[in-house]
Amino acid sequence: MDLTSYAELAVLLVNRGDELRGLTELRELLDETGRRESAARVTRRDLDALRELREELAGVFQAAAEGDEDDVVERLNGLLVRHPVHPQISGHDGQRWHMHLTEGGRVADALAVGSVMGLASVVTGLGVDRLGICQASPCRNAYLDTSSNRSRRYCSERCASRANVAAYRARKRGA
Image (cartoon, rainbow, N blue to C red):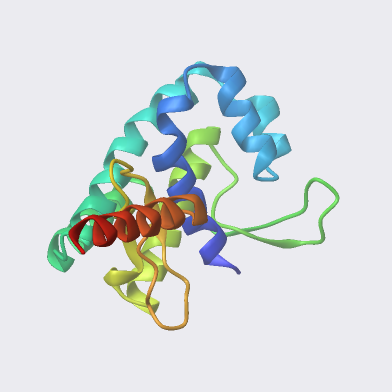
């Protein structure tokens, strides 16, 4: 089971949560991430629950960016208690049989369980320092560092380029 893809879902929820103004935007996000069946059955309650989850996940990334491992673990453990894992074999959207962390309940339940378990797996397997907040100003997007040398500091190439250009210009002005 690829739990990294679940952790990447957590990053998407944090970074695009402000864009989730209605069911249309949530359905688009779910379609984009290959969750077409979930997109078809999402409700207003799911949207509200995911907005709340977004804030909690953002707190996990903020604590990680501040280097507060104990807070990250405490937050994730609290989320794991509230969103218990129920593994099931699933087949959907033309895919072969594969593992899902939950299939029962609301769409938001499945996304919460996956996101939280994915982040917990990254933290326990790779370390808290693999979760971060983009260092490009004014961006505050979350990111997941899957690089081999733990060197990621930006959420995207766009932010990395913008930060590098700004640093270059600052050096030129100071010279």
